[in-house]
Amino acid sequence: MALSETIIRERLAFIRYLSNHGIEQSYRTEPHCAAAILTFHDAIELFFGVSCEHLGVTGSRDKTYFNEYWDLIAGGLNGTRLTQEASIRRLNDARIALKHHGIRPAKLESEAFRAVVVNFFEENTQLVFHIKFSELSLIDLVQFDGARGHLQQAAALLKQNRIDSALEEVAVAFAKLIQDYERRKLGMGDISPFFPLGDEVPLYSSEMEFEQLNAGAEFKVNMENFVNRTNDSISFMQRIVRILSLGIDYRKYAKFERLTPLVDLPSGEAPDITWVNVVKPDKIPVEDVQFCVDFVTESAIKLQEYDYNLKMLY
Image (cartoon, rainbow, N blue to C red; front, side, top):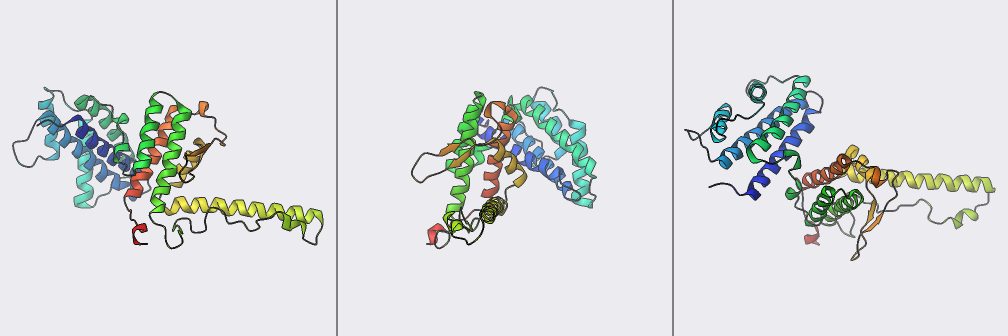
């Protein structure tokens, strides 16, 4: 029985998720980059399996070995063979050496396999399924309903080249993602474990109190500037700690923050969106908007790796 297009896309989306995870691993320093070989191999083997089901081909035995898939799939494609065969066979050899003999590939080898795997999926997904691998959406893997809806809307707007609207939707998606994840983990007094001090913790809340100081005007101005800078620094550090404590890549977040508007989510009201960043929406390339969509999607999947709900206990 042939797989439905929905199931095919869901499985290919998961394969793309694995592939992206392998790509991230390949950029790490040694020895951690070697783990990419295992992840790449798993993603390719899953691709082989989905391809066989889609083409309706099976092996002669219960178990099909990795290097046997090439001939098997070629039979389903009327003799057309998948590309990158020689390079993927070398990747399989590297995987066997690592997993069964403890021989780690060099950093340069992991990087070379990264390029091979990217080309393998781009070329062969189109060949077997007539789908562009780069256009497969990981959004369907997002379990947070509020965030997923805005991500889907952002992806649709991006296809229409409506850059500013797409960035607004993806910014709202991220805000709702963090809000949803955080709210279900609030402790007594609605204190977040990721932002325990609240949104604002001013050292000095009233400028009028500076006027009551028995000091010269210059000292008062300097003192007020010092306190304001300290407040800003504390607020900045709070935001960093919040992102890092959630396990989100702060370097990617920093880029995302520069490209998207500020979003406030008042209770029971529509999101309040404010453009305050230096980068103008009409200057942002499509690739950077796609980065924002991918970043929020990946962040959601990462948060899903460990989720819990404490609100039910209070």
